[in-house]
Image (tube, rainbow, N blue to C red; front, side):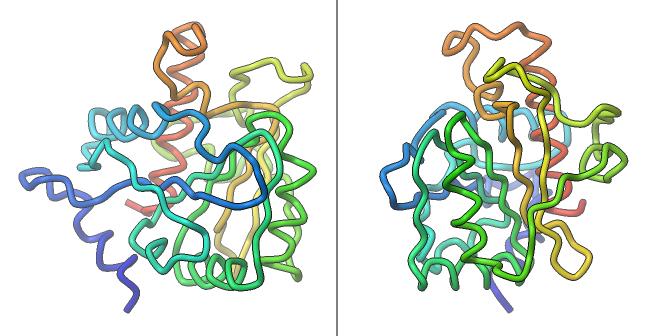
Length: 214
């Protein structure tokens, strides 16, 4: 049994030291995978406070081709530019996702032309499909009747949420024209209005709740 599934059992061990971390996916190609360094710690703390989870706020950084990805039931990938997966990395990520893992991809503006072919290499038989507002990802702990919240302007377009569906399960959620990760960052980083940051963290909590199915 992959380590991934064993670790889920520790999610609510609130009387014990934190045993689970959210994971940041490090990729090749020159894109800034390290963007938003305060995002995942704030999301972990928000989930601990509002959903009773027991995440370590110090997230783990893991490379796409490493077996360590199986230690993280929730992976976050972000950046502004190029994303490249080798054949071995694509195969490893595919095994992770089909084995129960969950990936959130957040286009931090400029990633879209690169991440789509990268994920096509992982799942050549699947298409990223836009999820309807009625999808359960928007109805977890918090209800988003109009889909993703709009955190940053980008091109002024409406935020859109796409997904990869494997055997009826959403295994990858891709947020575009939204900047959820920026909304998770410390307030002084982007000076976003408190209501925008709250919506971003609530939507992030929905992703975590869906990924862990608690």
